[in-house]
Amino acid sequence: MKFGPVPLDRAVGATLAHAVDAGGRRLRKAHVLTASDVEDLRRSGLGEVVAAVKEPGDLSEDEAAGAIAAALPGGAVDVKAPATGRVNLHASADGVFVVDKALVDAINAVDPAITLATVAHYARVTRGQMVATVKIIPFAVAGSLVRRVTALAAGRPVVSVMPFAPHRVGIVQTVLPGVKDSVLAKTVKVTAERLSRSGSRVVGERLTAHDQNAVAGALAELARESDMVVLFGASAMSDPDDVVPAAIRAAGGDVIRAGMPVDPGNLIALGTLAGKPVIGAPGCARSPKENGFDWVLDRILAGIDVTSADIAGMGVGGLLMEIPSRPQPREQAPATHAPVEAIVLAAGRSSRMGGGNKLLALFDGQPLVRRVAERARASRAARVVAVAGHQEARVREALAGLDVAVVANPDFTAGLAGSLKAGIAALSPSASGALIVLGDMPDVTTADLDRLIAAFARAGGASVVRAVHDGKRGNPVILPRAVFPLVATLEGDTGARHIVESGEQPVVDVEIGAGAFVDVDTPEALRLAGGVLQD
Image (cartoon, rainbow, N blue to C red):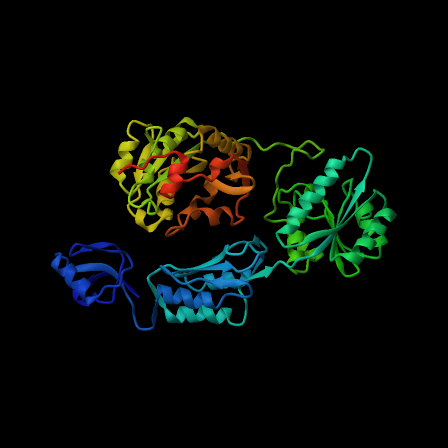
């Protein structure tokens, strides 16, 4: 492919590198020029355009991305249609993502023009979640490079999802003096909720003394009527011959591993009994927060064999989360004092409003975008940036007089990604995080924003912080500086959701109430929220 200035007499079939005006029309970037386009450009006074011209044997960005993506999937992965040189691959089932890292590295080493990115190996994924993406960087790429990539992948699944299979699970809990009934009940409830993501269920429960023989008897009973047994000891395992692993052996089973290099989750035990998995759960598994127990449980529920070596290899990239309830005092992570800055996204076209701009709708006589910006400005955010696009002048007028920096997203029609990138680019170099506030959420308060910022500080400024209500994700979201480079890779109408859910950064959920879900995308939603749409 040749890239650069192209005379108009050789421009038919070339791919525009930049948007240009031609005969009253706007020709977008990546538009393939026709003879009619060239004539319009000539009449507009242009003699050349900056464009990409395919050479013999080249494939267009979409052709190349489609061919590569088609060669990658193993089971339970759907390949989407190519667009702008990108093909996304999505999980077609809930399960555990499996990737051949060496093969991905080999593919990415073929040529910088061809890229493949995935979520983490063994990440838990849900149906419909994007698990990998192929992106061709230039507008076209040599077919020989594409063939090299597809040859590497031939006959070898590069990315797969191992679907969860429903299991019948038995639970054993040991009891010592002082163990509260409420703790035992909560443990069963939390475990049942964990199992529900795989369609599994609790089919039997046993309470026993914290004694090797008593526990062994309970394990043997439940192993006969279930597919897996989870054992919660009233006292944490402190030795490979402690009650939990010893009971597995006493019942006639084998202990695969006692202890793991994942914190929280160190004190896990894994074994088998009558060919069925037995997990001696660490104390942190009584909490719904992710811990090393989840990593082992998910793989087993997805039919992935877990060996001692597998657990030994979990040390790098572990969780390392502090749990205040641990009995031993721990050094607390210092709260970050680096500032969080807010980005108010206000560039959208309100396409579902039938013509009006929802951001200018009046709430108690005040434009919605101003209401949101004022609340952000009154929060603990050190600075507020608003990103405008559609009806930019009117949005700027609505924000006049506020201590808010307004930046433009000239490509707002392409979707959300451009606004995120414009906002991130406008932040101060000292900003430790970006509080992403949607301009159409009237019920998010200053107090809500302060709760998110406080949680970000407590987490040391290194976690994603997400507003939730009743356990369901919502908005706003704080992105730590570590993920800013990932925002720069977003394209089209893509927000930060897949960055948040990629597993690259820990996620802290903060309950803020129903305001986390209230937006005003339609006239009816606007009316119900108390807004009045303007012309």
